[in-house]
Length: 261
Image (tube, rainbow, N blue to C red; front, side, top):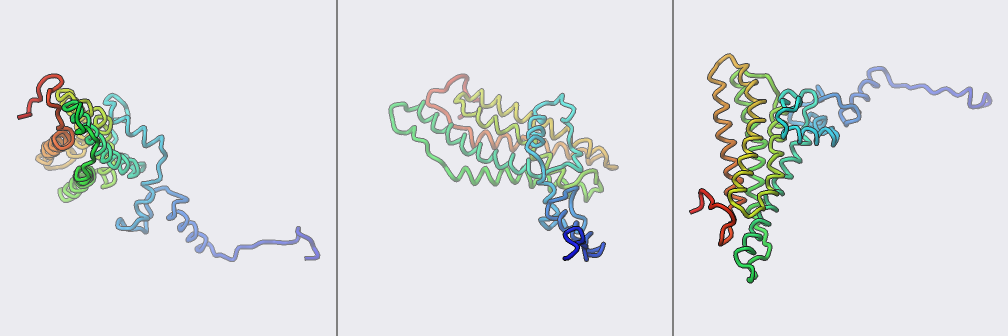
């Protein structure tokens, strides 16, 4: 102490291995995120934490590029090491609330146009639709890509990871969010056109990214899986239209709905 502050020396008593372990701990906590921790299993939260480390600009860019087939970033099946789960999670969650809220609003508008002088136009929420939307959207946006990845792994096609599959399906559903708001318009033919456009855009995005992966399989019949995926995609589009936007006014506006009895 007589030598003054200049004479003080600080020394770390941690060994090199201990310091390396400490850095590894910081990395697993998200301070350094170059990818999944090699020591973390896929059933642990540490494995998926890096996939939620993404900025808002990247998420928004990946959302709107799904609407631009001529964009150079349109084909994004191979997203490693930048695949993320943050964007797909919020895309699917936002879609659930968009379907629920817009469907309730469409019901209220149809009731008002049918009986403008009555109290039937009161906005009422059918929370059963919220449960249906949650099960439908999460099953298709998460369950289908996971099952597809498992099937391809069984068939020996290992060109992508399960995170890439979920990322692709999640971002592909973005187009349904603006379409849900536009389907509030009480014109049946307009709703069908909007659903058809959303089906075509999201379907083309999925096909353009999935088919190259299927084409790498040695067995040619594996490519026929794209037909099953197209059927599932058409089914989800019909479910969105019939379950959430089948409200009509007594006197229809525009041409008659082709499937209304």
